[in-house]
Length: 342
Image 1 (cartoon, helix red, strand yellow):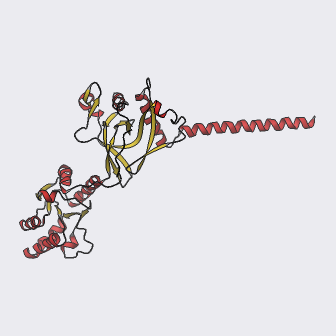
Image 2 (image 1 turned 90 degrees about the vertical axis):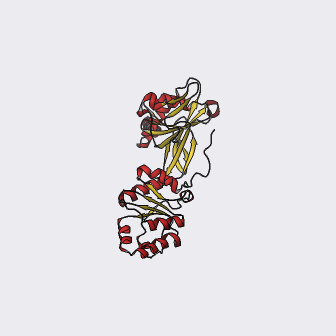
Image 3 (image 1 turned 45 degrees about the horizontal axis):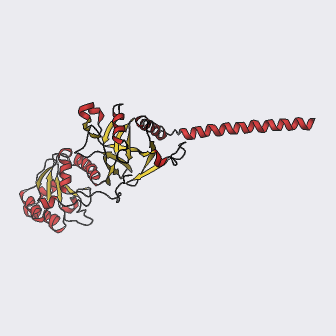
């Protein structure tokens, strides 16, 4: 059985270069100043900060490790200062108090003096035409994504019946072939063989996706690599999807004495500190794995909606047993009454 790597619940480390790459299109970021060494620095606090008070000279509780945003208010205040006073404030911010990552928003540009100060201190300066409020909202979301705990999971992920299903099992057990059969029945591939998992800390949910290089491709033994989008169309591939069910494909001889028969005992799989429903499906010659996985996904949708067929049947059987016991008791009472009269 393939194992998930350890140290799962730690946030990912990323650099200013990673932030720039991720934000070029989404945040319309462009680099104005920053050496390779500066861009390689880790963003220790993945949050956006507006350094308004710091620009006035008040540095108590100044969040120097965050992304500093120079928006309309900050830019207007700096513009109101004399040239030397402005330069002194920026030098204090960058050199003395160690702020090192700046983004000028709303189409504003850093002055030549500010850029010189940043370069001397090894700081990074970026620009975006986005308004400060829009940039702050989008950047906060992007920074949370970059910093989210993540790991690689050896398994194939598909969207079946609208939910994200992660197939795991030993090599050769049939994960990709099962996924391919489901895709031909309307499912969609998220990732084949190696799934990148990300934990959303705020919602405590788990999301899966493919790596950039392998997205949309599958490897089928005996056939080779298959480009699903070219073969089946754009609907056969998904981007990031929430993981709502882990299905463990196990050879029958390995689990024949421990397979759940009624469903009264629900299994869970913990990944990155998130509990995900888990179903163990035995694999043997002649079993229709495509149908079984699809049924397991439909079953999970019912469970998520609040309906549990195992509890429903158990309740029905208990009601029948109680009814039979009541009839039996009443019948015994009537028989005893007749015996006493006679």
